[in-house]
Amino acid sequence: MGVAGGWRALLGGGMVALGCSPATPAPIGEVVLTVDTDAPVPTLASRLRVDMFDASGTWFASRDFGLPDPSDWPTSFAVSAPGDGGAATVTVRLRAYPDGQLRDYLGETFQDWPAPAPGGDPGTIVPTPTPPAGATPRLYDGSQDVTPATEPQPLVTIDRLLRVTVVHGLLQGAAVVMRGACFATMADMAEDTTCVDTEATRVADADLPLSAPPPAQPAPLVGTFGASACTATPRTGTTAPDGTPLHDAEVCVPGGAFVFGDGATPTIPADPVSSAPQRIAVVPSLLVDTYEMTVARYRAILAGGFTGPPGPPGVLANDAAIPSGASSLTDETNLPYCTYSDQPMGRETMPLTCASWATARAVCQFLGGDLPTEAEWEYVSAQAGRPSKTRYPWGDATPTCPQAVFARGVDGVTSAPDVCADLGFGPQPVGSAGDVSTGLGVIDLAGSATEWTLDAAESLASQCWMSAPLEAPSCQIAGASSYSLRGAAWLTPFLAPVTLLATTRARGSPAGNAAVGFRCTREGGGS
Image 1 (cartoon, rainbow, N blue to C red):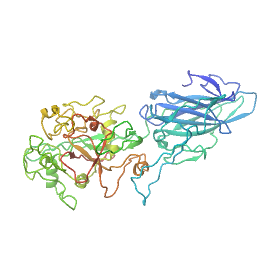
Image 2 (image 1 turned 120 degrees about the vertical axis):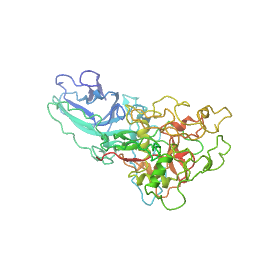
Image 3 (image 1 turned 90 degrees about the vertical axis):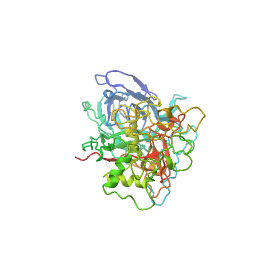
Image 4 (image 1 turned 60 degrees about the vertical axis):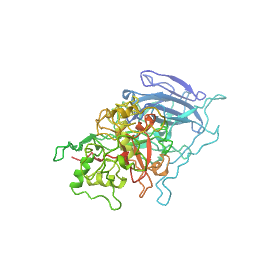
């Protein structure tokens, strides 16, 4: 697709044509539309769907183009009106979306995403209306129904309506930008309103201003949506007075936009929290702890004046040696495997576990930051520092025993030997495996300890998530009964690698246990 090549065809009974712009004006009258996007390509925009409707609202043309290279944008096509005079008005619907993000088409299914409802249940699942099969509009070629079987998923699509008037014998044109701010704001075909450049805002579709001759192709905008530099200075690693490393270094992560969630990720059968539907999330730049909070670092934070939130003890102390076998895995907290002790017992470089969610958050706030949101955690684990989203922090390779600290306890699925435990039973010092994020160097995201996030454990289809904005989306519920956990832990069975996926979500009781740790983030836009 573009000026240099592609297709040209009369569509819809010979009244209007959609095709590539010729080098010289056609005698029939033509409008050349140059379409750009500020979304990252191909991460969020690798295809462009073009649909056309005549003045009566009849759908008469549909094409879908792959534009997977940033150099494919801006792209151009022409709307042509053959005939011997007069003008034709056409509504053009443009939808930019990532490859593979489709749903079945059953008729126009408009949905406006909910605003937060202070008096409502934020965990209520937002239903998607389903029209009956064969619902309109339909696309016909003569008497044959040629309606496309699929359409772009609205939550990951930029949806734009344009109304153009093609005048016989006149070559005109306009430049149009598909703005990332319009992701998930569906065009309302019934009301003829569309998002132009402001999130969750539609304006009345109006005649697109045209110029004759068409304007020159503008400078590309690809990748500018959601991008932000990390300008803060990351903390470098320090040591305790006795020389023990505190593992308190940070990584500076530039902000960006990505597809959050994964409809294909299986939920954990015992405690499911859905990772669907996928949506677009913009993560501002941030500083993220290179390692999980360690016992030694927490001890130093206590010495620095941290007292913890009010209420029951926030970190359970285990003043006994950690067992060398699984016989003590008996209760909710698995206290014998908690890593913190009132006095050092050789576990100082292990991740701090058995910390409540409230204590973990209070620690991060004491350090000038907070727990990561789920979007931040997933972005760091699967997208930041790489051209496309990966399944695991290190890439797409299936985890092996040396790849991450997991399956270091009871298998829990079969009686087969737990081979990973041969590398060390129970929790291990941070950085014990090759669990390092691609392009960033953040360590132990997939294994070691599963990690607290800031968000309540609600489905991505809940009102809490559906009403969250594109930028810095989060689902925070005061006094939530459970919070979302990310990443696997030393206790994860060898035959359950789904929990190591960057998109897997789990539910955690606020009290925490011996498999749960945390890391902190801070804003990355400071100096």
